[in-house]
Image (spheres, rainbow, N blue to C red):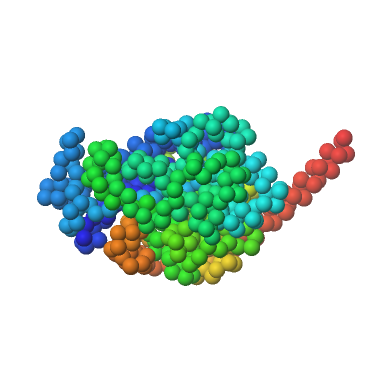
Length: 527
């Protein structure tokens, strides 16, 4: 048995974790990159910056594995980098599992050079195309067929946008691929995708596990422009070029892997019936594993693949940790970097639960589940003279937590949720954990690791290589030693407070509706 490397390429950072399943030894690396907004509604990234971060984190864990082997399990590449040999002995590299964020889209020319930026899930330029499909009554049909809600996040609507607004680029692109496909191309030289990424595109027929002709017609692309769909347990090989960049061994098996949401469930142990996985990074999501594709009757939830017989039902919010970061930048403009994040949490903690009646609707980027409205705007409600920066800061955090609690309730209406397991850097904070647990009103169990999706890549790679018979067995091999397995304890008074806040939010919204009617009457009288 050797070391398994899990890669998680997210919205603002790439993470890699290496795990020796025999000894429990682990190491990890992280590299950040920017999310750019060159125009209103656009949220894009430079593909080269993302791929440079991938190389950086893989090189770092490769060095750590080589150093741990004391030279016995390493060699030198032509460039002089330490390279661990995949001989199968304990401490040496065995396989690389790959996970990425979903819904990305990038056009490539015939020479596999980008002709677009990486258009991320947060990009809502295709809002009119999504709205048109909904107005035509096609949203339910498309969701049931593809598992992906009709929303400008999806590659389906993004491709429709190119067909209407940038046909020259649409025609210049020989290939249309996602973030996962870009990373696999970078690592293996192959233009392929896998079922998890494809199932989040809006372009797949889940029953057939293949591209949907009807969706391709809507998107204006041909089957030949899209990559072949592999199982999430498929094995490829690391190219010699990637080996030279990272110090990993050429020919190292590369598991095609899945997307970050389903892998987050796996990595945090949220794969049993009744257990939901919650992750909060830049965005956020709640998901539970079901044995076959399914959706809810009101079209509020997605359904994406983890493996062919394990599907993740849930919803994603666009406004997760970015809301607190926005609040920190707005209300603490003089602070900087990680110090600002800590100062923001300290300031929020000064306000009482419920923020003395101040409520934030955290829709800074519109919203996905359960509302699926990219045009929603965020706001603070119930502002009073006594409210200070600490109240605005805490209300931002509470707004995210209450939105996530609403999503858990929607999921519980489709399949029972008895426990929520959470992952993400925000949950290192006791304030985040406490507010979320109180808002949920049901057990919240933090994992001891903020790298749930990367660990999920490790576990899925174990299944892909035959080192485990099923997902449960794979998870057992990578479960963090000493992991937290107790629910967060919160005062009953806090639970009651947040239950009241939910009701107060509805009352405030009704009040503002009455105000809008009153102002409309005044306008009519003046006219």
